Image 1 (cartoon, rainbow, N blue to C red):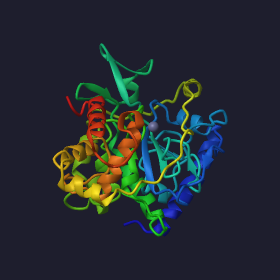
Image 2 (cartoon, protein in one colour):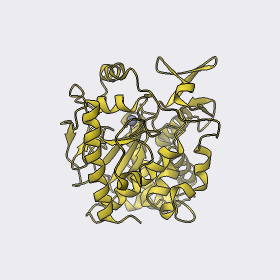
Image 3 (cartoon, rainbow, N blue to C red):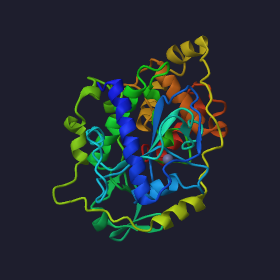
Image 4 (cartoon, helix red, strand yellow):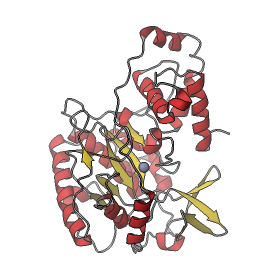
Length: 370
Ligand SMILES: [Zn+2]
């Protein structure tokens, strides 16, 4: 378990190093595009992919003065970029890739939509889903250069994705552990229910996507995940990590960052707006309704609903049962908010027919259901 003081020291040193690196890149070292935390500090983490191939371009866009609608404090690369000032020892102890803090964590950011005041936005340098044409792969209209990236795209249930590197996943695990440690003594400590992929709260989003093992990263970073508790294990010792390690014949080359301004212009042109809504408190589930769900007509559907939510990266226990636990209720509510009133009605935590229909639709969107 990481000591709270060490975690705080880590973020301070990381931010100090990041400011120097941003200055060297000619990128603003902070953004005014921030907001207050709903509970005084962040209680969760939202994982994203950048949908691009450049780390520096993402930093430039994130802190650009022209971008006043979307911001995020953390960008995690997939490798160590060449020619950058080495990280302080305490930072490189945990971050095994080039990763940058675009601002400190004293305030929240506009990065998700209604969870902005709750979660820390963590952008992972990853193009996301790729389109295969002949031997070539594309993200948006650009080629994903397999040689240059030093990465073979992965196929999951008929769709292609840029893989996350083991180094990137290990850095994500440590980052979650460090955030948990930094806020451990607060009135509102980190809550695994709020460690989620962007797609868990926004219907139009697919990040972090099928290539990111959300439940495993959360489990290794925060709290017990099924049998045993991996949150104390050296991430490199996690058996599932092996499949993310590059094949010996693939070397992650020194990535030349190009077309940064074009990427920034692209992102600005997309006019991504995450400022529209604010967080809401969860409604209390009526006791009678809870009993009805657990013992009544919905109980037969509950394991399937919870398994589906689990597959979509929501925090529900490893072996969903008919117990309608607090975490399961939150997951259902979060999904209902994600699906919106037109699909699920008012979010009420009741996994009724509308919610189940929307869930099936969502699972199909991710090829998790035929
Ligand atoms: Zn996102």
